[in-house]
Structures are given as C-alpha cells and as structure tokens.
Amino acid sequence: MPADKDGKTEKPTPKKLSEARKKGQVPKSQDLSSAISFGLFALALTALATYVLQRSYVFMQESLRFGSDPMRVIHELPAIGMRAIIWFLILAAPFLAIAFFTGVVGNMVQVGFLFTKDPLKPSFSKMNPISGFKNIMGKKAAFGLVKNLMKLFIVVGFTVYTLYESAVVILNAGRVGTFAIFPLMIDLVSKLAFNLAIFMAILGIADYVYQRYDHKKNLMMSMQEIKDEYKEMEGDPQIKSQRKAMYRDMVSGNMSDVGEATVLITNPTHFAIAIRYDKDKDQVPVVLVKGQDLMALKMRELAKEQNVPIIENKPLARALYKQVEPNDPIPTELYQTIAEILALIFQAEQAKKYKI
Image 1 (cartoon, helix red, strand yellow):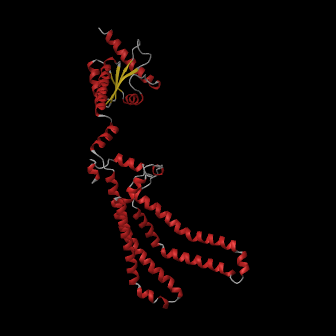
Image 2 (image 1 turned 45 degrees about the vertical axis):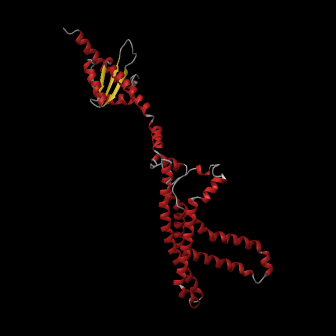
Image 3 (image 1 turned 90 degrees about the vertical axis):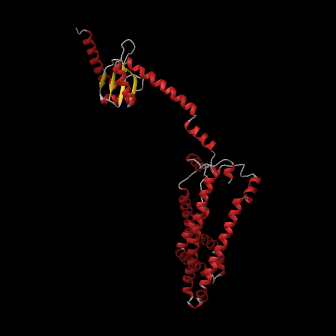
C-alpha cells in the first residue's frame, strides 16, 4: 500500500477530512448517480412513452395536413420549422427535468449540500501531459476500463436474456393488432429497464463503498502530520506550558491583592469580588480581583486571614462578576449599592476605633 511506504498509516483526522471537503475532494460514485437516474427513468418509462406518442401524433397530424398542397408547404415552411423546434423542446422537457432532479438527488445522497469554487480554479498540474499520461495508464484508469467492460457485458447479457425470454411474445406481436403493439413493447422495455436498474443500483452502491474507502486511503496521514496538525490547532506544548506558568503567576499576584481590598462581595460560594476604595488612590471604587468556585473559596480564606470584611450579596456579586474586569471601576448603576456597603464598613471601623 502506498500509504504504508510513505509512512502514512493513520486515519485522516476530522480536520483533514473537513479541509478536503472544502476543496471539493469528496467520495462520490458516478455509477450510483447513474443508477438513481436510470431507476427513475425506468419507473416513469410508461408515462414518458405515452407522453411522447401523444405529442408526436398531434405534431404529425398538424404537419401533414399541408401535404396535398406543395406550394402551401413551401410558404408555411418557417412556421413548420418553428413548430418542430417547439415540439422537440416540449418532448425533451420531462426528460431534462428528470435528469436535473436525479442529478441533484444523486449528489445530495452521496455528498450532501456542498458549494466550493476550488475545483474550478485553474491548475497547471492538471495540464501537465506527463501527469495526464500517468492518469490514463494508471491503476485507476485500468480499473475503470475493466469496470465499464463488465457493465457492458452484463447489460448486453440482460438484454439478450430478456429478448430470449420474450421471444414468443415478440414473434406473435403482429397478431395482437396495431393499437396493442405499443403497450406490449413498452411493457417489454420496462421489464428490461427495471432489471438493469436493479443491477446498476447494486453496482453503484458497491462503487460508492469503494470510493469512500479509496478517498480515506488517499487522505491517510503520518504520525508527524497528526502532531503538526495538533500543534497548529492547540499550539506548541512548550508555549502552552509557558502560558500556563504566566497564568499561574498572574493569578497568584491577583490573589495577593485581596489583602488590599476594602470589602469582599460574595455569592456566597460561587463568586467573590474584591473591591478597594482608598480616598487617597481611588476616585471611585475599583475591582481588584474576581474569582469563581475554587478561586472564590480561596479569596474568602485570604480575606479572613487579612481581616477584610466579607459581605454576602448575591445580586451584586453576580452583576459585578459579569460586568467588571479586574482593575476596572465600578459601573455607575452600582454606585448606590456599593456606597451603602462601604458606609456600613466605615461606620463599623469608626465604632471599633472609638470603642473603649
């Protein structure tokens, strides 16, 4: 296996598959799309044949009414030509509609909704004659040739078998009358088309399974590629460890600022916000540190050790934690509540100071 020779022994990651999909590199079987299209045509064959016969009869009836007057035919020739074009478009309309519908359905079933411009971009590698020759003479081309020959032989075999099985009906078709021949032939063709549709569906499903396998095999990755992708997505491990160390230093430094706080507002256990208001340093109250869960618990412990007042106020704690970052001033809409808390703390400190 080429993937083994290149050291690509690992399955493609979701990121690799996603990038390939964005480029239009998706597993798709043309045989399965053809099988879906042929199957719908087979199901609609009787209706389509009846539609074609009725429209053709009307067209021929209108066109041949000028047969007794050659000069009138020549005079009406442009109108007859335009009528023939319109007749052809009317006949082709249901076939084109089914072909378009089945093409969309066939792609949606296999690929889903996908819009990308990458396959349309010019590529010099595609115009390289050496690469083109390798593609023509490669294993994929040989496999495709064998597959197409196999399909041809099986289709011919199905046709011959159906004709042989219906030989008696075909040979006696002249006895059923002119009006019965058409339904008889349609029934015979429908039977053949239905058998071929089943065969093509089986072949299409098998080819789609192989295309998925081949797609993933071509996207196989080496361990080094997976490591490089991980580094790209998550960052270099050394840089990550440095970031973690810096974060720990930052947190420990912030935690030490709890001792400078004037008050610690709590939730009581989920949130903790350390607020300082020093008339010599601050024009308005400032948030020094904020923490959640374990960090909030640690802040409560430090506040108790440093004799920082702890006030439980759930709405205020939630509002401060969501709205304010460390070293930011208190929002104006919270001034009144903070002022009341600070007033209580200052009154308590004054009472202690003058207590005998």
